Image (cartoon, rainbow, N blue to C red; front, top):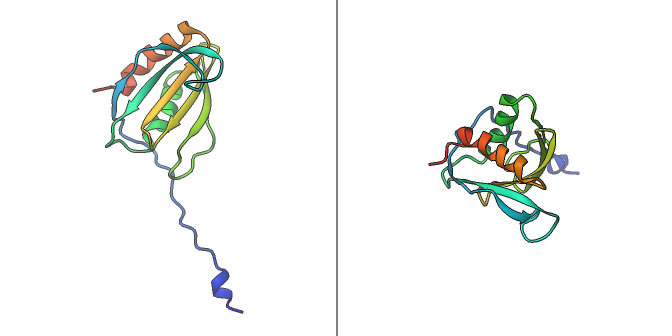
Length: 132
């Protein structure tokens, strides 16, 4: 009975190879709980994407940073088209850094329990993010 109704058509979207970075600003490092208003105390900073930026630029910035810094280790979930609310981790200078990015709200939040780790990470990421 109506086999054609059971067919599933899926649109496969290739993962972008690159994205143009459009970050409007990078906040200073500030004391903050890991999840903004809850979680363990630590330090973090936010990279704010421009409204005209590409949604893939958040993942691409993190992956490019990890490639350019062989001592960094990035762990993110597998890419999916239109991804949002992505949680991962970055090991920077042998220390754990929590990564959270939201493509819809245009930002990346990086957090560490250690201020010196997040300070050095921010300094290392600034040249790549090129805020306006």
